[in-house]
Length: 605
Image (tube, rainbow, N blue to C red; front, side):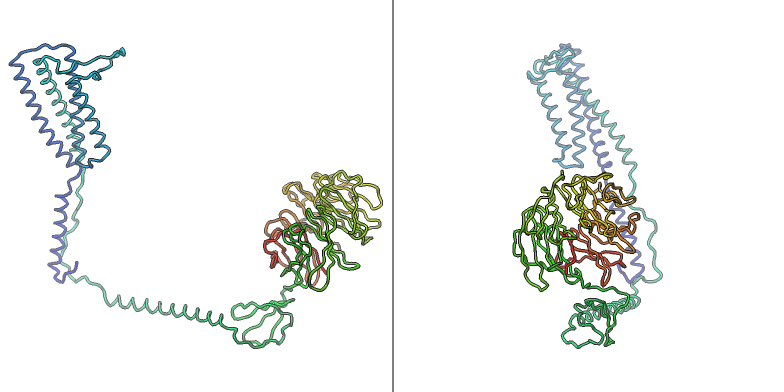
């Protein structure tokens, strides 16, 4: 409310509060107060009815003296009096509740139903009904005498006594209820309390227009500056995106083999085939970044994709191309790869359920020939180190197969081999070569020229052998990876040509070892591809976890390249990953391999 006259404004404020208080006092009749008024009215009415009933009884007795009625009639009248009293109680409660709730309320309906039932019983007692009966304590039924059969004078006297007794009980009930309601009403508090009357103000109260205008100008200024900054930012981004319609050469210091470029702010990061080069907007020349490793390694790789085919990469795994194969029946079954370089490069493919395939590789791009050999489930293919035309194949269900003519024909080589489910093979670089077979029942050894295989599993706690590796500098040292389940496997070492095996202390226990890569030299290394990633050791005793960046899937194959930079490649469920020796994590190399399960990985010419 606004008013220019301070006296009038004060009078209006006080009058408004007074009128509001008066209105609340008149209209704020609470539930307890309304109930009290109702009970007072009903009690006064009940008192009048009691006086009238007592007067009628006294007059009747003076006229007719004492009248005797039968016991059965007395019982009927007593029961009727009790029902009338109960009915009056319910009617009072119903009338009180109707003050506050609607007729459709559940409580109202329940009270009405009880009153109707009692009224029905009263009518039965008055006019007779065979159903109007009671049950004695001994279980027998007792019938009431209807009032219409009671002698008239006796009935009238009993009725008057009943009415007096009923009215007395009603007055007693209403008096008790009224006292309780008065206590509830006394606890109610007033709704409005005037703390202080309004007084005439010394100064007018009005909005501070000048202050509001100043604040609005300051807020508008800062808002405009922010809008200008945002608009300038997006305008610059749009210009940057539109740049490229005009080009000029920046070739000084730049190699010919640059393939892709990425812009970072005001500078450029050019990704070349071998090195990272940088340039600035103001400088016309390029510089090689000395601390950085080569990005595109000049390494050729072949990968076996289990679902689609054989992939080839010529840039160290950055991109992959699916090789066209003439026989499409072997799709979805590629499992293992072996490459024979002499006299000409030939790729041998072991498949799951489709046997061995021979692929003569051409150094020129294009289609490659494919010749199907024998339809068996092949797990591993090895070449004899002394005879290039001799091949060995580990199969699932047919034991070990041998070929003496480069894979043109095959023969079973299972004499003395009790387990025909062979997972892996390893051959020594000796003359004659010695072959080791890892089966589901342990390790077996056979030298070329011997008539049968010999069991060599002493010391193995888990006999399901999934990987074997031989130290090329000392063929008496062997490693075996086991694992019936992912949490049961371990790594074992033999220093006596397989005569006995010992679990590697502090080695990769609790994992399945799928592949073992031994790197001999002045600083020998042991690399393991396991069900949980990659592990490395330089002495076979202390182990490092090299799994950071891998997808947490099993690693089935490992390839180590030494030049131009030392790098390790891993074949997993999610494709191919690479890690340089000076890096701390793996880099996914799956362009062209998206979603492919890679089961084997080998270097290619």
